[in-house]
Image 1 (cartoon, each protein chain N blue to C red):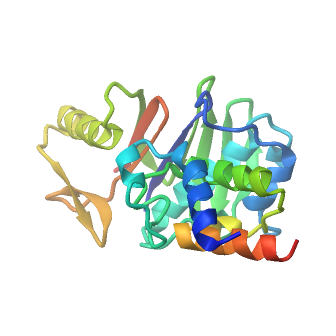
Image 2: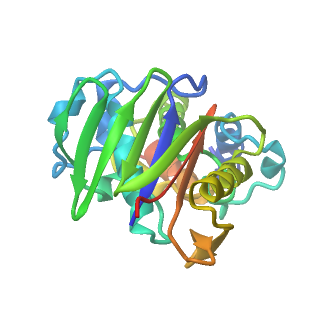
Length: 170
Length: 84
C-alpha cells in the first residue's frame, strides 16, 4: 500500500517546532537520531509517519506515537525510512516537506483554488489520463480513496500552498 | 472554570485553524478536529501548544492520540487544570 503527506513550511499558522515538541511524535522505538538535529526534523518525522498511516489504510485516528519509524540513510534533501514492512522516502524542499510511503508515482503542486481536496483529485485524474490514456474517477473502498474502475489505491495530501497525490508505481 | 467556559476558549483556539468558519457555529463536543472541523493534521500539535500556553499546563506526550474530538480535548484541559 502507499501513502503521501506534504507540509507547507511557510504556513503562517505553524509554530516553531523546538526539540521539546518531539515528545508528541517520537516513540522510544523510533530510530530518528539522524533526523533530530535537522532544522525540519519534526516535519521529516511527522510526514513519514503520516504517509505510513495513510498506507495502512485503516479508518482510525492518526497517532504518531503508534507508528514506529526507523530512518536509515540521508543526504541533504532525501531521507529514507522504514516502518514494519513499509519503506519510504522524505524529500525536504525549500518550501515543503514531502513523504512518500511505498513505491509510488507522485506529484506535488502549488494549490490554485480554495478547494484543495477537489483540486488534487482533479489533478490526479487529468495526469493519470495523460500518462496511461485511461479514463478514471476517484471513489472509495472502506472509506479510503481508490481509482475507479480499477480499485487502485491512491493517496492525497494538501497543506497550505501545496497539494500532492500518489498512486502505485506499477 | 466550567466545562462550557473551556469549550468557548477552546473554540477560540481551534478557530484559528478552521478554514471553514461556519463549522464553528454549532460546535459540538463530538466533533472530530480533523474529520469534522477539517483542521489540517499538521496543526494538531499547534493546538496542543496553544492550549499549553493558554492554561499554563503541560499536556501529556500521548495528547495527539487522545485529543481527537472537541470533548476529548476539553477532558484533557479539565483534568490538567484540576491537577494544578
